[in-house]
Image (cartoon, rainbow, N blue to C red):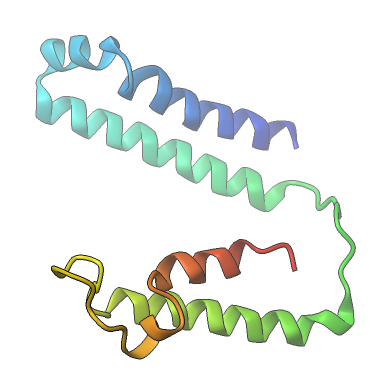
Amino acid sequence: MFQLILAASFFLGLHFGVAGTRLRLSLIDKFGMKTYHAIFGAVSLLGLFWLFHAYRTADYIETWGQLAWFKPIAAVIMLFAFLFVVIGLFSRNVEASKGNAPAFGIQRITRHPILFGGALLASPY
């Protein structure tokens, strides 16, 4: 677990400590834009692999009980969440049109299908 915390701290620290500060500009001035991107990308990728490895080797700690009878219901909810997101990605944006356009298709259920699908995915069922 300690390795997972360390890997996550490294990855977040790299992005918040370098990419979001003036250190980034000084590194770009020192190495150039292409070299900075290559080095930062390589270090980020190594940090991401470290994070994946640490996650795979971390001990499993069950924090919430798993309700066996609820698994089929959760699968159906996930199916609907996935459908809302995918259909929303390929739907015409009614809100962007001028005036109050009539709703059709998935937007008769919700004007924001991607957000609705994300809410279903995040729901604590």
